[in-house]
Amino acid sequence: MTQHARQSGHFGRTTVGLALAITILLLASPAAAQNASNATLARVLVLGTGGTIAGQASARAGNAYDSGKVSSADLIAAVPGMDKLARISAEQISSIGSQDMNDKVWFDLARRIRAAIDSNEVDGIVITHGTDTMEETAFFLQNVIDTDLPVVLVGSMRPSTAIGADGPANLYEAMRVASAPEARGRGVLVVLNDTIHGARWVTKTNTTSVETFRSPDAGPVGYVDTGSLRFLQPAAPAKGAKLKLPEAPPLPRVDIIYSHANMDAAPIEDAVKRGAKGIVLAGVGDGNSSKAAIDALAAAAKQGVVVVRASRVGSGFVNRNVEVEDDKLGFAVSLDLNPQKARVLLELLIANGVTDPKAVQQAYGATP
Ligand code: ASP
Image (cartoon, rainbow, N blue to C red):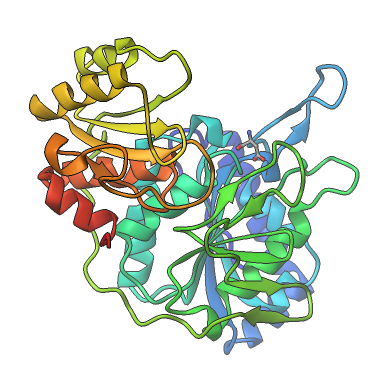
């Protein structure tokens, strides 16, 4: 196993020193010697970003912990048998809780993945990531990375120092998926709790349970454990063109406005004043909202703000022109994309110059 510590924003000298020490230790270990002879194993690059999977108990009281304290190299070294699954290299992109996930880390991830694929360094990628915004990162990468190789996000619900930490098993299973030829051509995947989900459909549904990730409208794409890997369907044919990653962050500002009873126009007007280029409505029911809110969205659309109606409900498709006159008002609907993923897609579309409501709708998917 080789470990490369890449110096990036949050990855200081001490960590680099530690990673180098781990490199020497691992290269000198019997596992590394065996790895060297396992030239047929898949090459998997692990990119660490932080999260609870890299969390450690904190000095604060109770079950408090801090995300992103352990490097991906250390996480790998702590899981027995990883060297039998793949030839692994590890780099640290960031060390943050995913509540702090941001455009810079997304761009760093996308560029590193592309470089690794373009230079034929890897057969698969694993990204260790916090669970809070994992679905957004997965969906972002799904839109900007054009590859058949498996790109697998993994995290955990319990920190590495917890009793019954779920990180090691999740990491092992993610490595199984990332190194498997059967995982090719399936887009970006999320692996936790023995379950494999597709980036478009997966969402976090429970604040603390290890069984938090679900794909409400599509179901999981497969299952994995330490002994088996099963996909429920054959891989879909390649989808073709993807969206272009802009030259540099930040992505255009897109705000999510959460709809509720007794809603007025203020949050929408404020978003426009703050310079939002797009607004995603986390609407009630079928992407709906009060008359005051819909009128404010229509006024925003007239001014050139791109408006997409999604739903706060958590499952189901948002339909066009049912209670809201989308054609007349110039809105698009997100279909099965939840508000946080609808936002990611809208940021990328606006960055790519796609702002016409019909073209925007086409990007979310055809409607009946
Ligand atoms: N706040 C953490 C994060 O998203 C939670 C987790 O990883 O489960 O980084």
